[in-house]
Length: 465
Image (tube, rainbow, N blue to C red):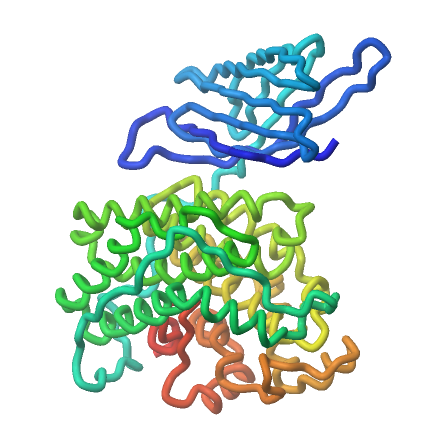
C-alpha cells in the first residue's frame, strides 16, 4: 500500500533553550503477521523537539489513516500513543520503549498486531559549540573594493510565504538538460523575490566586509533578514522546484547572517532571524533525508547540506549541524574513483555544469566544517580532491566529458567556460593547494567572482589573500 505523509513533526530537547533542539529521526514500525495475514513495515521520518513527536499519514487511496503522538521523558523512556483507521474500522496503537543514544526503540500493539518501532537520528557530529562561520569580519579582505556611490540601504523584496515554482526543463527530456523557454520564463517570474533577496543580501554583505563591520551596513543587513523572518517567508506551501529554490535562498541568507556582529545576532531581531533560518532549514531537511531518494544523492543534497550547515552555525542549532555532517559524509561517498559523480553524468549536455554546481556547496561546507575543527579534506586522498581534479580537468577541456556522455557540454546557453564556473576554486584554494588550478583562476577571475547562492563575492569572501 502506498502512503502519503500529511504532516510530520517531532520534538526532542530535554533542556529548554531559546529555540529547543530538534533532531530528525528516520526508521520504521515493523508489525507481525496475524491470522494468516502477512506482516508489514511502515517507514517514516519525523522531527523531534521538546520531548514530543507527532506523525500523521494517509494512504494514497484515502482508505487508511494513522497517527502517533509520542513523548520522550527526561529519563529517556518513550511512550507512543495513537490510532489508525482502515475501511471505517478504527483501532488504537500503544508503544513503549526508550531513547538509547541516537536510537529510539519501542514496541507494543497496533490494534491486534505486535509491532516494533525503531528510529535513528544522525550521529552527533564531532563539532563543538559555539560554531564559527566564515569569513571573519576581523580578518583583512584584500579584494574588497569601494562601492560606487557609497552605501545606501534599499528596501528588501516582498517576502513570499509560499514558494510555488515549477520545473523548467522539457518534460520529454530524460537527461533534464534541455530548457523549455516558456517554463523558464515562468520560473524567472516566480522566483523574482528570492533572486532579489539573494542579490541584495550579497551586495549588503560585501559592503559590510568592505566597510569592516560598519554599523549602518550591519543594521541594514539585519533589517533585510528580519523583514523576511517576521513574515515567516518560505514557510508555507512549497512545490518540488520551489523546494530547490528555497534551499538556495536559505544558503544565501544564512551565509550573510554569519557576517552580523554578535551583539546584533543577540538582539530581539537577531534572535528572530536565527529562529527563522532554523525553521526554514528544518522544513527543508526531510526532503533530502532518505538515501533511496534521487534528491538525497544528487547535487540537491549537497546544496541542502550547505543550507542546513550554514543555518545551523548561525542559529547554533546542533541538530542541523549533526544532520548536515551526516549527509555530507554520505554525499562524499557518491564521488567515484575517477572523481566523477555518476548521477550528474546522466545530465547530458549539462553534465559538466552539474559537476560544477555540486562541488560549489560541497567545498564550502567542507571549509565551514574545517573552521570548526573537522577537516574532511585534510587527507590528500579525500574524495573532495578527486572531485576537484575531475572538475578542474573537465573545465580545461570540456570535449573529453562531452565525448564521454555523448553530448557537447553547455553552460545555460553558452559552450564557453567562463569565470562563473570557478567560484568553487576560490573556496577550494583558500585552504588546499593546487598550482594548476590557481594559475587558471588567476587568469579567469577578472575583477572578482560573484555568486548569489554562495553569499555574494566569492573572491572577496573566500579567496586567498
